Image 1 (cartoon, rainbow, N blue to C red):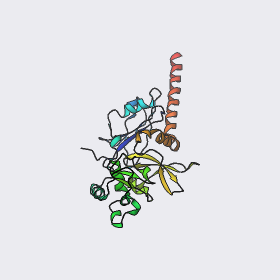
Image 2 (spheres, rainbow, N blue to C red):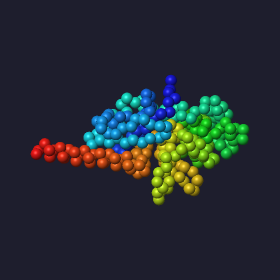
Image 3 (cartoon, one colour):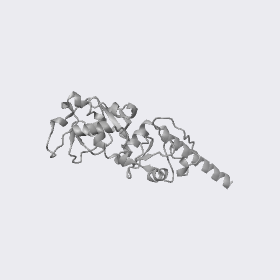
Image 4 (cartoon, rainbow, N blue to C red):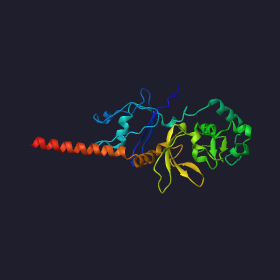
Length: 261
């Protein structure tokens, strides 16, 4: 029986040689793992969190990033491959949509009835973007067309739907919310909860759309991009650790002088 718990912890890190992205279920309490797990018991830690998305960094002068990740997730359940389960499902409309679609006998075959722009007004109510993408994330159908990057790669499914209409991404995100970064010469980027995962999107002015920067369907490769976005847009969480270790070094030096005097 899969849990329908929406609270989860995303773990990402900067170590390029060992990229890491993981989704972990928070089963007993809605808070971050305690810093004492990486031998930092004196770090100021506030376990109480309100609804929303929160960010916390873990740093060590003796542990590598993947070692820190192993320690803070040691008692958590890894749900990365099934993070999309129960996220936005609506079983009855999904079954109605699936039954109304046409099967494809060969990969080369194109069926107009499965092209979004050619759906009848009546069928549009059943075949919404959300319903189609839910079916795609469960591996039941494949997605083709200009908006295929919002779905996992096709895997020879017997039903393929062509998404050729503008995508209202905000309607597909948790609470329709973006965590926007600073606008740069490379464009506006933002993090958002999409199908149970954190994904990075970039604003495309030509298409008037938010396009995924991180890879949908291969989320385990996205950790470095997410960590870099957080580092650039929320530098204080890293600077706090730098200040902490500077103070530790000064304290050790002072202690050394006192013991030698």
